[in-house]
Image 1 (cartoon, rainbow over the protein chains, first blue to last red):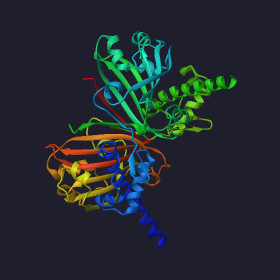
Image 2: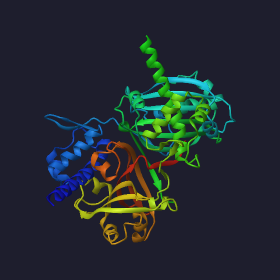
Image 3: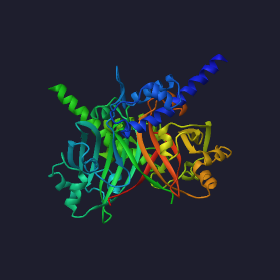
Image 4: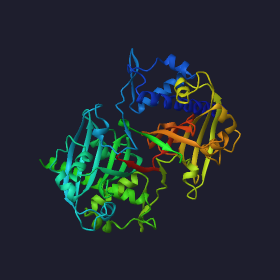
Length: 246
Length: 246
């Protein structure tokens, strides 16, 4: 009986810590703590009407996610370097972050090859038609942000390889080469654990939560031209947007 | 020198395995393999123009994500139970999955309390005004899908607690109680690793990648009424939608 009660107390404390952590997470990511220092534990105890142990557990959760660190004599400080990316407007990373951080792309692989049927189908290409492949590790402020595998139709992909891919978004280059704007993109997003090799490339512990996106982008005339598989480091990106009931 | 070359070969193989896995992942989730059995390794070798080792590594990656299993004598079979949720239209889980799986909600906690200021601010409430809190573990076909922490304004939240929360979406109930439809919601999404307690509640290994959402929902008249923090099991949800360039 005592064991059950203790279990119950532990569960309640963990539940409360999760509630507190969820509110603080958003504040940390939104930069509410202007000086980067979280309020003292005693303030948080009052603000959340929670026990000191609960507040400590909540801070532990955020530390586990790499958002804050404990600094002796200072308290809990924000170390998150998360960037916000919209899920409504189709924008490249450099466009999104204009003025907020320098994006550089390490081009790991480029080439031309005959893709598997799934990729031909998505890009509406006849079987056997080659595509251009580009693999880039993208960094913001020098720290890995995402690993992007990109398949591009040949007539745009081949001239694209002559361009400066290190400092430019593919989207911007594609529009220039195509002589028309992009139109829409179909995107799926999932959370997956990083396999050991992807984790090593992204300089993050194996098993780290990644936001994995697949995005098929079309020109304004509706033609699909760019199929990407993107692994975002979970500790570096927040996707944001508006949903509508009707 | 030999060691460098070996490292190079390993890197190339891992890079190729990732490419193959990314294409197969989408096919698995989209139900392309109607009978739930993936093509034989020799077929995948031909389809992807990859070595047998690369194909095996790719299948290992998908096994690691809990999407497929190896069955002796049969091959690789799909075990994924992923559901697709849109990120454009504001729909409850039950509404989204109508006809695709039975949603049941285990109500873990309900109550009324004075929220921290962050939550008052998001819900546009004066300081000290209580809110109703509901914590639900949502299951599809009996298997945990998400853990939802929900804060609702008192005038709607109190009558909501009298309703059947086990079998109904909060959205549908809110519209009935408010006498008007919902309007829009602001949502953020992130990938985080499950802390041990959340993992235990969601019946998934600790560290599992979760899709974590915060969603503030407004009535059609613009009034914010429902603030939710939702942990989706990464192996059970795919978010999907369309992005527009302009």
